[in-house]
Amino acid sequence: MIFNRQKMTVLGIMSGTSLDGIDFALCNFSFVNNIFSFEIIKSQTVEYPKSWIENLKNAQNLNAFEFIELHKNYGDFLGEKANEFLSDTIKPEIISSHGHTIFHQPLKRITFQLGDGAFIAAKTEITTVSDFRNLNTALSGQGAPLVPLGDKLLFSEYKYCINLGGFANISFDNSANQRVAFDICPVNFVINHYSQTLGFPFDKNGDIALSGKFNKELFDKLNENEFYSKKYPKSLGREFVENEVFPLINKNNLPVNDILNTYYYHISFQISKLLDKNNSGKLLITGGGAKNIFLIDLIKKAVSQEIIIPNSEIVDFKEAIIFAFLGFLRMNEETNILKSVTGSKFDNCGGIVNLI
Image (cartoon, rainbow, N blue to C red; front, side, top):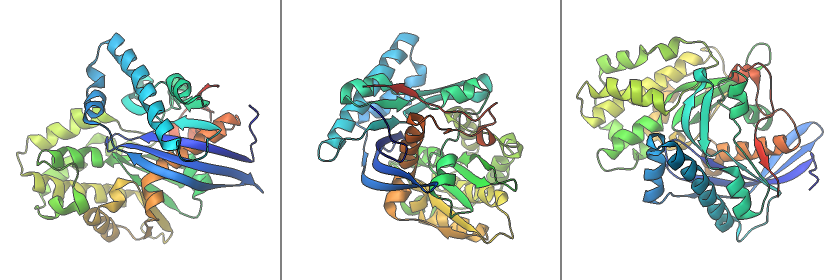
């Protein structure tokens, strides 16, 4: 197939660390007069069956053969769900799949996104791009975050772009007009964990946290973590939360609503530290955390920027849209990962292509 750089239809598939479902975004991308634009044709979040939630939660504990088997099976599962999603709409030229991150240790040049693209391609009979991060870590980059190039090219009207997903990340142009980005702190990965101990899948509207009390000692301890004083590029993974955040929180023996209340203040504080106090530019917030009323109220009080929360489709599917866009760039052999963001040796064009 010959791909036309000026226009392409792509299905983006995204699974975040919060395990709240698989995001599908079918998009048209165009490049006219040196400007990229997009149109969403269809979007949907597909909830995971309980069996797959357990599979993904426990994947890091499997032996080598079991892990490879799960990698293939998960690719087959994503392909099956993609076929269901596409059954009543147009067929895309390519599928661009992020996969589900299991390991992320960039200092060891290791990152792994579960979901074999070859099996997605075989199941759907559509050319599939996957495994975007691996080349960047091989080039001594963080392999994350990858969304910032899409922020720069598709959402250029905003000074800052923040996504509040399993982890919060931020991107913006520095004084040299280079895009920089990094992870800020864990968000829903922590919030959902403690909400689930009370029998709730997540903290709807922040109601659990709102009912709790602020704990200054825990707040100070959370903010003392050395990650927050490191210079970017830097990124976070499941390992950081399991090894450093959960043990710190749990040893305080606080009620869950007090833990969440304090953690929300921690998130808003870490975000406010990063923004220019005198800047009046617009701040775009997306991701599941954008629906958390209490958290957004705390962020609004902590920052001076005008906060923009877009329509629900952008809030929910921005990352899937941008991974579709990264696939569009990959098929045209254009840079889709920036060294200014990841700290890699070079800008690079990431993604393994399985042609059908």
